Amino acid sequence: MKFFHLRILLFGALFGILLTKSQVISWFKIRDMFHFREPDLYLIIGSAVATAMLFLFLIRKFAIKDADGRVLAVPIKNPDRGKLLGGFIFGVGWFITGSCPGPIYAQIGTGEIMALVTLAGALLGAYAFSKVRPRLIKHSQGSSPGN
Amino acid sequence: MEHILNPWPWYVSGPLIGLTVPLLLLFSGKALGISGSFQNLCQLATTRDTKGLLRDASYKKESWKIVFAVGLILGGFLASRFLSLGHIAFLPMEYHSISGALKLLAGGVLVGFGSRYAEGCTSGHAITGLASLQPASLMAVFGFFAGGLSAAGITFLIGS
Image (tube, rainbow over all chains, first blue to last red; front, side, top):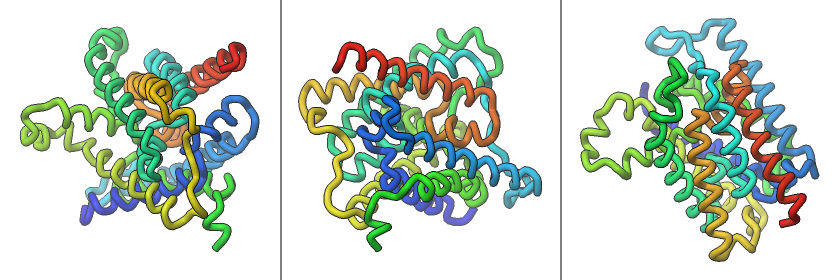
């Protein structure tokens, strides 16, 4: 694909602008969501899912293919217990830091210097997981090595 | 112009965030997901054989996520520098301290560990995964909110 990495960079920048301007990168908005003080974050996630669902449905319905002739599709993940347990751990971290992975990067871009600490923690956490992974997921079958 | 400089309401930003998923798939063949970049950055930071890693097929397949992450930083910069009225704080003032840094570090570890264990984060599961009707993503999102709301409940009860 021509200019593949340039396209990715542009999509990243657009997504970063969207995350910043929608304020989902704000610790305060995340608190408002978890304390049910305002519905904004739920409405953003809900309308994003609905929009993405509609267009993914259309892509599947019309079997839109890439340049190599493969039908475009989202990879399917294995519904193992890691989704629940890892999800729970992630949720606690999301509440504490007020940011999930995309917003960590966007916060850094806005000049929020302390977001570098969040990123350092996230990299440590991902590294720690790679060390204990063989023990945690040996019971689940068919799980891909992550993405 | 004022509409652009002010925060964008949910009915504008939500659908645009959702639209990123099919557009990224159409124009780059990739499924939106961001937490995978942590794994790539770790691999890059911990290997001595960088050239070997860069040729590794499984690494190459996912390395676009690092470029996407650089784009996110750029986007955050552009949005706050050119598309906003003055400075907006995204983290509370009290986080600019030693105790705040420890909170962010500990919370960051949970975000990094949890997202790798769940094989995805808010973008990969809550948006891409739910939009493609995956049971795994429904489980993960249930976990996200179970964790976040539990933490919210505890801090509400002990009042910090």
